[in-house]
Length: 350
Image (cartoon, rainbow, N blue to C red; front, side):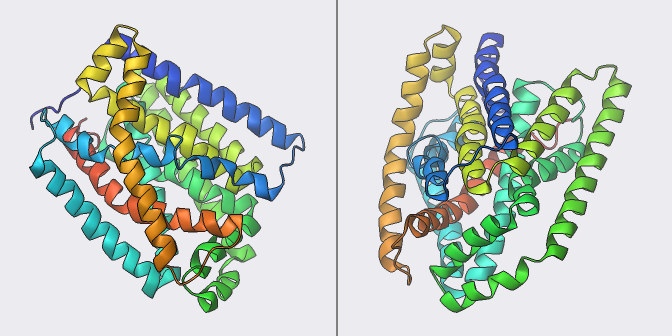
C-alpha cells in the first residue's frame, strides 16, 4: 500500500505533543482533584462546555472531513472529493436521522456505540504517530486499546453517575417520543451498573496487562506507562466529574484537539508553518478550513429544530437537540476517519 501524505517533522511532532498531552494531563488531573475534594457545579452550568463545543473545537473538528481525505492521498479538493464526502454524509447521516424519528431508543443506543468506537479509534493516531508508543504493535492490541479508550467516556460515567446518564438519555429520546423516554428508566438498574463496572474493569486489566507484557518484551515501558497513565487519569476523571460537564470538557479538549493534531499532520502548509514556529498560520488555516462546514452544521441544527417532533424549551432540551445533531454527524465522520485509518495503516501496520 502506498503511504499516505504525512508532513510531520520532529519539530512538528514536538509542537503537537506539547499541545495535546501535558496540558490535558494537568487540566484533567486538577479538575478531578477538585471534584474528589467536594467541588460542586450547578447542573445548569455543567452544560456550558457542550454548548461551547458548537464553535470551540468540538463541532469544527469534524468540519474538515472534505479536506482530510484528499490530503491523505496527496491530492487537492475537487468536485470528486466534494461529491464523495457529501454523499457519505447524506447517506449515513440521513439514514441515521431517520432512525431517530422511527426508533429513538435504538438510535440513542447506536449513538453510544458509534461514539464509543469513534472516541476509541481517535486515540490511536496520537499514541502511535505522535507519542510513538511501541507496545501497540499489532491489530489486536490496537483493537483492545480502541475498546478501552472509547469505554472510558461512554461507559465509566454510567458507573458513577447513572442518574445523569439517564437524564441525558431521556432528554434525547424525549425529543422524538415522550412515551419511549418514559421507558428509559427501566434500563438504568443497579445490575446494569455492576455489569458495566465488571466489564470495563476486566477490559482495562486485560488490555494493560497484554500491553505491559509486550512492552517488557520490547525492553521499554515508557510508551506503556504513558498509555496506562492516561487510562488511569481518564478513569478517575469520569468517576469523579459529573458526566455532562466531563463529556463536554473531554469532547473539546481531549478528543477534538487530538483529531485536529492529526489534521495538521496531513496538511503540508500547516505543518510547514508549525515547523517554522508560525503558530498563527497553523491555527488560522484550521479555523479557515473548518468555518464553512461548521456554519453549515449550525444551519442543520436549525433545520433539526424545525423538523423534530419535540420543541426544546429548556437548556437541557436545546443541548439534547445539539447532541442529536452531533450523533447524526458522527456516523459519517466515523466512516471518514476509518478511511483515514485504513489509508494511514493505523490498524494494519505492525
